[in-house]
View 1 (cartoon, rainbow, N blue to C red):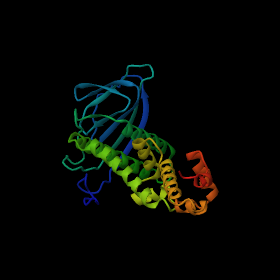
View 2: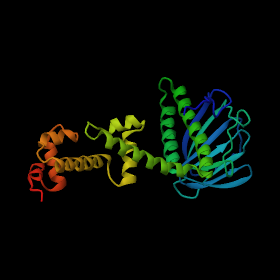
View 3: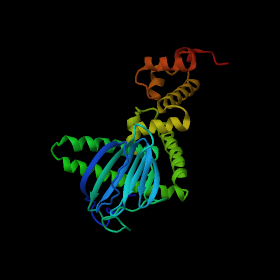
View 4: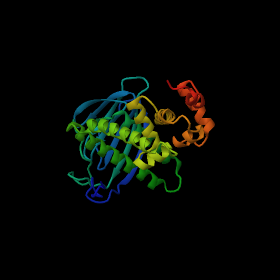
Amino acid sequence: GMCKEMYDITEGDLNPEFLFTCVSTRTEEEQNYHAHDFIEFAVIMGGKGKFYIDGKDYEVEEGDFILLNPGTYHRSKAGYSKEGLKECYIAFSGVSFKGCKSGYFPSFKGNGKIIKMADRMKKNIFQICTVMNKEARECSAGRYFMLKAYLIQILCLVVREQKEEKQEGEGKGYIFQSTGKKYVVQQIMKYMEEHYPEKISLEHIATNMYLSSFYISKIFKSETGDTPINYLISLRMEKAKELLDQNPEETVQKVAAAVGYEDAYHFSKVFKKYYGISPLYYKGRVKI
């Protein structure tokens, strides 16, 4: 159903003040142990190292997402390796999230400060960090708003990650996903069963199911081991064979049309490839 709550994660509108972003590779330890009066995210985009946060050492590595709320003391102890620690910092203020002091970001599950990003999140966040930094350097029109828009995406992705993890813990997440996939595949098969005499395109099915055709192909293949198109062809061939078995006098043209082929010649080629014998020969065979 529709989400009723527009402000489902904030107390009001999400309109942060974007402050700055920068990407740098740190090879030296940061000397200054400091805190800010704004929120800072540190995204580790490469390498392995340590962060010293509020009197404790944290091991960090590529794919870690670090939350530094106002007043949180921190310094980067840089990398273990020669290539250093690639860090992206994003600073902002002016937010008010639900269940959290205004001007602060809700602390993460676990140690409250660091998320080990899963592949999908990592890919999304890294991508945004990269375009964000390009934007920050280029000074194009509307740069501040563009940076704020990227920041808002990051904020939402991080909140979602926290919420979704919670659901999986309650035993819903993955189970729903797999039954969801089976259901989608059954719906696609049902649709083909009912519409095989008509023109069917993957786009058509996708639109019908409010999903992307790419996603449908992927799920179908992962669940059945075959592509939707191949499945449709085999379905049409079986139906054609049934028709020919029932009335061998029927013209190839009519059988082709009955299973969704406008072109009888093309239909014959597919039939022959499928059964090793052309429909003309097939219907001409003596039934014993």
